Length: 638
Image (tube, rainbow, N blue to C red; front, side, top):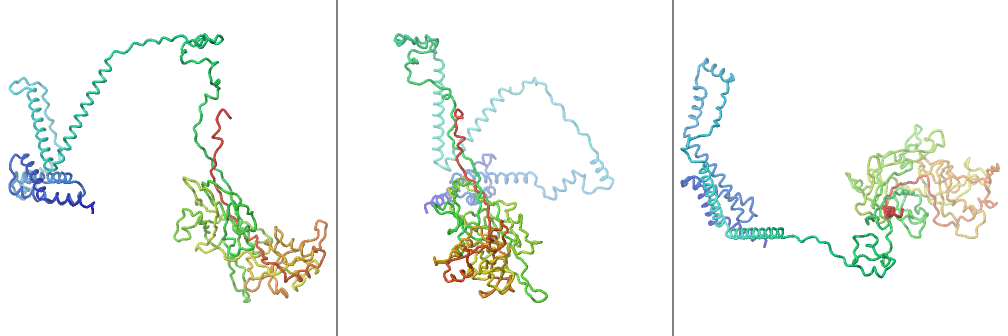
């Protein structure tokens, strides 16, 4: 409410009868002075209506201005409008003809009459078309008049000068009177300004006078100072002093002999100009590779190859089978993080069931990652400047497109295997990076990686790990050719999984790694101990075939009618192929098949396997800022 009071008081004063009368009197007085006569009743009424109109207009546009500003604006606009009105009245009074008479008179003067015969009108037009000669203006008369009848030029100049001074004084008095009537406080401010300017002029005059007097004073004569003799020269017989040695400008008062000086002799390095204390930095590019198989796939079943978390600087925890993928390096002062490429397996993401002509099922069609136009990578810790028509693109760190693919060829063509190799996806023609400016990121704790389809769903929800039910030897099954070998040294081992898997999850030629396959019973045979160490090796095992069936026997090789299986056949190692031996290896020189069946009830949990050929790889470029020590070296130390 306090802010509205000044505006309300200004409006009341502006619309008051006193203010209106003052403005009207100022305008009427000014126009009467200009015309030299009184305004008639009609002109006065017209002036009052004009003043009332512009009072409303000025306040509606500049209502927040002070009262003097509003009054000046009203007087200015009203005077302009009323001046135009008086000019129009003067024109009408000077030519009191009707519009019809005006047109007729112009026609008569220009054409010689409205009604002319054809011949006369033709002559007029021909004369108008012909270019007439323009009469040159008369030559100016440059002669000096010798008449003394008129006043001299000096008298005319003095008369014009007095007229200008009189008019200026009258305008000044009229303007001051008007301003005093409009705002009484304005006169006080004008007087204060005039007194300040007068005081400033007096001070400037005094300063100029003092400078003139100072310049006019006589300058002292330049006389050399008489240097008294240095008594220390008498005490130093071997060091007569700098003046004796030839330094004529040396002073016995300020000069200290070199023998008694507390300072050491100056070195050339002391005369070098030191560099400014500016800390310089340099940017270091670091390549970061992330492999999805390094996660804790043995115990953590919630993550898969397309969705997992990466931890940085996990203290004493090493890399390998731990709760998450970990990077030992701790990145500091990160300037930019850029996604270079993503390598994905070309695997069948869904099993499509088709019918053959004999009404049998066909599952050969492969729907893989190349069926999508692009793949989006979402990293909540690195949300980029991407914007899209849905929430998944808005929060995506990068959008990847096809760049290249490669595969191994175990047969005559890639169609003979369900494993189509790998493909590289890159952010083609896009900026897939996070820039930290002006201050870099202090450190990076973790990255949560999710690779999504264009509709926002995960690329694949199927797992790349399988729980192992048991491992059997091949001679116990009645299916050829994987039942070859003796009971003690089989050619193949069959891994039975607890759940069926798709033919695209495990294919011939894939690498399977097994972990934690063992027994809770410590009193196992030496053959079992050696077999457990071999089956859990780090390099994994190649898949020779997949099958489906039950513990009592394999029903058939390959998959069932809908493309699923639950047995993985891996090859047994041989005794020593370099010696030419072709017999399978016999673990512990015993019957490994009987031992596997004997200790079935004491198998440890969990025991799982992972398909290393179905993993994803991500490549990042991390640019960090470090201090540049080379810029801190002085030139004399190089």
